[in-house]
Length: 159
Image 1 (tube, rainbow, N blue to C red):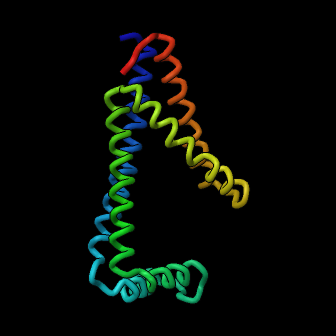
Image 2 (cartoon, rainbow, N blue to C red):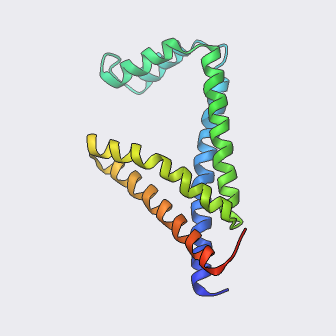
Image 3 (cartoon, one colour):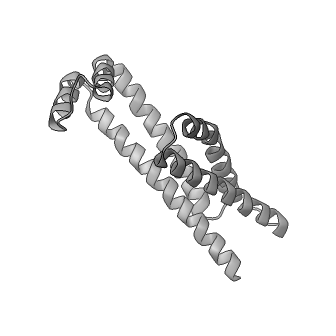
């Protein structure tokens, strides 16, 4: 395998690991939401705010507590189901990239590009190092996927 192809393969696997990690994180979050069924979410939220020594009257904890007060079992199930669906999408994408499938590269380019307008909007309206890093990382992944697809098409490969 030529050196450029090895580097490309390593790059695809690195992005696959990133996507799998995102999927696993969201899957664990979904399980966490599922575990909250039939529990007093408001009481748990208040306990978390106290444990973190946050002021419940300040902006972010107040939003967190207000949202927790509205969470019932139906909403928890919906959020857990959405997390499961998102995790499944990330895992399918990771599979396609890990095994060097063209559809995985196209899917990664498209799914990453969907977030770019939102990330750039956030960066413009709330500049900071975190939004800048996230936008740069996502832009790099999308550019890499496009590069990989173009290289594949130039070589006449499918997959």
